[in-house]
Image 1 (cartoon, rainbow, N blue to C red):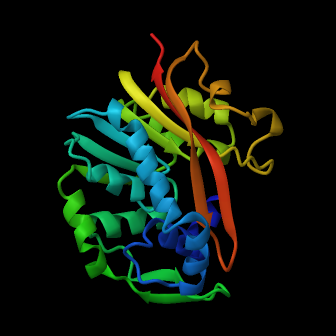
Image 2 (cartoon, rainbow, N blue to C red; image 1 turned 120 degrees about the vertical axis):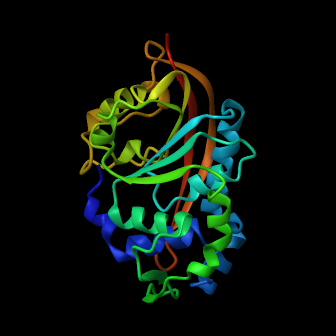
Length: 261
């Protein structure tokens, strides 16, 4: 995976918390929020998760066991919890301990964190504040309607448990894995024969993470017809604001696949 130390850094947590939970957190950076909303609308990262949920929704059913690979601070799990469908389980698998701890605090009310870091102004000054548990009470109320858990584990180790899921999400993880082709094979072992894989990739390849020969231009290059049946493909905008005035915007490809017979 991408260097895990990047995802344990306070600045990275600040970026993801602000992007994924900006509708609940205090507005830490009013200047940037105002500037960003004029271009891409309010909370574009949150909108991304809602579009993904809507994309996969028609293929999800009552009683499904659902897995989110690379669940970050848990926004997709929250959006899925709001579904009128009652899942048998919702599981987030996240490599970063810091992200896993924040997800447990926000979604489950556990208190592994005493503090939360936020981006406080356009100069990227980090300010540590008391974790606003009360703000996330509505989130926890929604999540309590589902059987939800967060696992802090590497995907390669998680696969070895040999558990199957009816729906597996893998969002913006493929281009952060050292071997995307191996990951695609591993994902197949997690999806039940009648289940569905929802994968999104921004194709933001880095040679310090994976070799150039592993870089592909389309999901079809990884999820070929010999192993997968393609159900649907579409483009979804993924926008995430970094520190100061830096914004990364991607035209990501989203695909729904079912294991081939």
